[in-house]
Length: 251
Ligand SMILES: [Zn+2]
Ligand SMILES: [Zn+2]
Picture 1 (cartoon, rainbow, N blue to C red):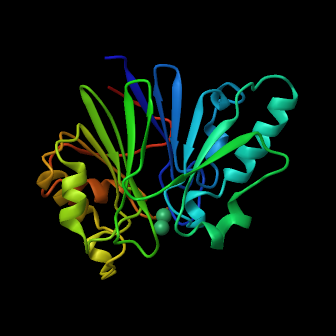
Picture 2: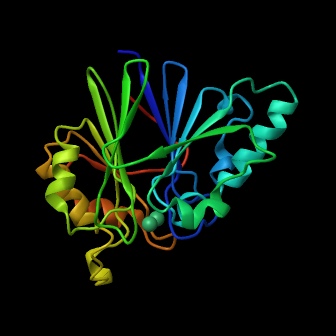
């Protein structure tokens, strides 16, 4: 297959710190780009203006750590379009259900060069032979989509923010993935008792139960040592690593 390149641009929440940004993952495939979330600070790592060409931006849910840089990206599209360096609009995909409450925060109808589409549960679109499909995890605090990117011999899932109350659904969606990029907001030692985010241990369980080949953890606390997340997930799933800004995976 043509190679897919997956580059973490942001791996922490709820705020950036130092070289760390809020959530964002760039997937490049056959000259196309799919940006999974657009968190605070990720435009620092984007190769402007080339990266705006053939770009699909997916906002998985309307929490601000996941779209904090969308305004900057949209304004960049406007400027570079006016300079003749961007011929096709950037495609931006937004959750449909909570749209009315968030429209003013995310939509830029002037001073942007973008085209909006909606995400609903079970929807999908294709880029050449790559299918991008969505499933509301029904376990975060608001409508929040898992995203699957699949072609004939490669399958990856980005969980985005997800809780532990609908675990079988997540396992089914992630089944037999080559890669799961999974949030791990907490360590068990935090005693968060959160049902709307996962621990690193939960992320390991998701990878194990879905028979995934590899687990990439993300959505860390900025102050916490990420080696602890990897150790915790590895108690149940060995092939686990921590996402690092700028460190790409090739498939
Ligand atoms: Zn988040
Ligand atoms: Zn969230």
